[in-house]
Amino acid sequence: MSKAIPKRTLGKTGLEISAVTFGGIINTDETPEDAKRFVESAIDRGVNYFDVAPTYGNAQERLGPALEPFRKHVFLACKTMERTKDGAKKLMLESLKLLRTDHFDVYQMHAMSTQDDYDAAFGPDGAIETLVWAKREGLIRNIGFSTHNEDLAMMCLDAFPFDTVLFPFQFSLGYTIGWGERVAERSKADGYGLLAMKTLIHRAWLNGETRGPYPKSWCKPFFLGDAQQEALAVAAMKRAINMGAATLIPPGNFAHFEFMLRNIDAVISEPFAEVDAIMLKTESEKVKEWPIFTPEKVGIHAA
Image (cartoon, rainbow, N blue to C red):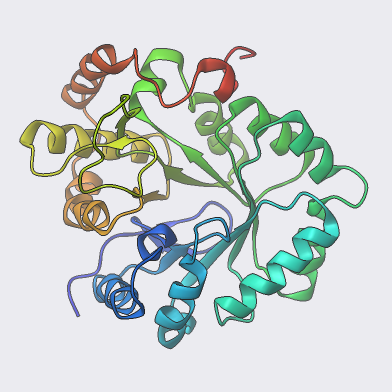
């Protein structure tokens, strides 16, 4: 087995998870053989946190068999887009079967984005009732949510004592409009586990721009093999860790996962510095015309 990557405590959950997450999209549309190879490579490197969702195409079908031999030694997170109690229960039970497990270590309400999402999930017969029931029954160990909208994040945190929050810490929106600052500060105060996605995202794709080797990424990641892009990527990883993230979730391709694995030791041992901040702030000015979301979409207008 290769040298294990650093482990970090996920808030108050007590879980000691790898500082890099295996995102289930990596396995989407891959052959069973490649999915098995990707998972075994991750395990060999000491990765022990895996995250997937029913909305990731056939990722659950690919991840379940590949992860089954290692399930007792890793933590598995899943999600639901269902906002009703019955819908969430049905989808959760389907995911448990597809992923060949009897429980999820973290289960999340996925992509909480609008007032309607909130009203349905926390209203009568809402999804939160299923999550509370499932935790009581031992089907899930910790309850979380994911969102791109910081206003919705604050509302959810006011409504329920969540164990985890999965949030995008994309550098350019962070520097231009402060996206993610409230979520990070509240994590320090409340102690919930912070999971960071979108850290290796550079900007939105431009019209007609080829996605090259990254067809699974709906927004443009840093392109690997370019020294300047890779330096920015490392700085962005450091920034997310500095903001309190326990683990980083790469874009949905194996190349960025491997990049994170190669660089995570340096990211942890060499903390975010002024030179990193200057580099990212300078780049933010260059790409601010192509944000992955508008301020209104991410809930900054009401900050």
